[in-house]
Length: 158
Image 1: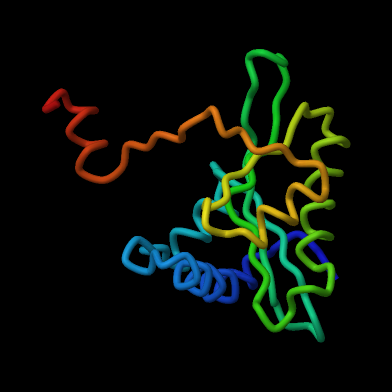
Image 2: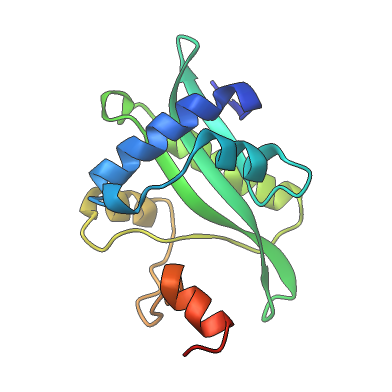
C-alpha cells in the first residue's frame, strides 16, 4: 500500500533515510532528525511532501518530493529528492508504484515534469529509470552550496 506520510511515520522515515545514507556511502552527511523532518514535512511552512510504502502495516519505503518551477515550460514540476525501498522489498514493484503515484500527482496538478538525481554508479536504478522512459541529462552538472561555503557566500565572506 502506498499512502501520504503522516507525522506518525516520521520515525520510520528517518530510519529509512539513514539506511539510504548508508547505501549511498553518505552517513557522514546525514544529520536529519525527527524534529527537522516533522517541521519541514508537516509544519505550517512545509518544504516538502512525503509518501510511504507499507507491507503488513510496516513502512518499508518512502519518497520525499517538492514543487519546482520550469521557466521554459512556464509550469511547476516535482523534484523527487528521495525514493527508497528496503532491499528485502525490492523487485516487487513498490518503488515503481511510488514513482507512478508521484507522476500521477504531477499530472493531476497540471505540472510539466518530474525530475530527480541518481548517483552515476547506481546502475540498477539508472536502468530502471530508463526502462520507464526517463531521460538522463548528461549535459547538465548539478551544483551545490552547503554548510560553511553557503554561509560564507551569503554573508559576503567569499
